[in-house]
Length: 283
Image (cartoon, rainbow, N blue to C red; front, side, top):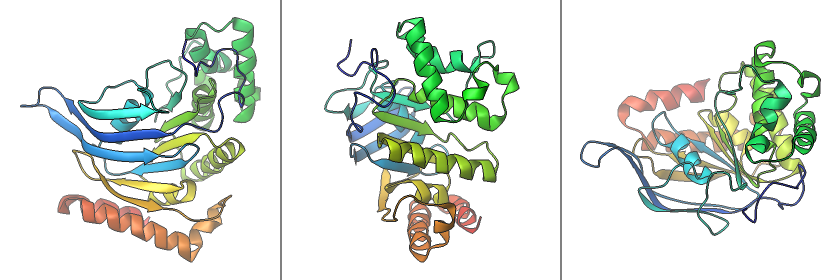
């Protein structure tokens, strides 16, 4: 069992406030080098323990691949990925991964879906149910514990998915566009909730998004990726005070930071991709 095992711990205890992540000259190929796809090329990134990092870029630039490397679900073709000084492995308890879609199992109740990672890890039934109940409470979903996925709204299903990612109290939380399918008002509410959860316990968060405004609203810094093969084009530090209410995005400094991110997106993209960055900025 890893030193960072989640067994025997409750939510919010035992694992400190996050772990540092080092990505050193990382490249990823899918398929043979002669005719395969180079998803990432020469990525270098240091993520401080307890920080909130947003990763932004167009489709296909390797954002999701980057998360899977940190989660230990994928090995780099070249370079190294280290979490707290060692190579991440699936199930080692150091990283929780939340996907763009909730991916709840249709025949399981909400609480059983949330408890699934603990069940797979062999945690006793009584303990995993207690910890799943606590996780649901943290995301405001206690009343839905006995409901099946078909009975949940889109927002409720996303809350359940976040609770499942948090169930093992991972010191590193990886979120792959978790709110992209939600309407604008619900998404804004979720952004506030995610910020609250992080401020209560500042674990290391890496958050993939396509939204410049969302990145500036949530992150300590924004990592701008180039088109495939993905590389780090620029890192924009976000020096806005917390907590950050939605109206803060009307602040001149917030607008300045958003403009800096959009400029980095436009500079790093081929001409055919530049309208994407410009349109996002006008949204």
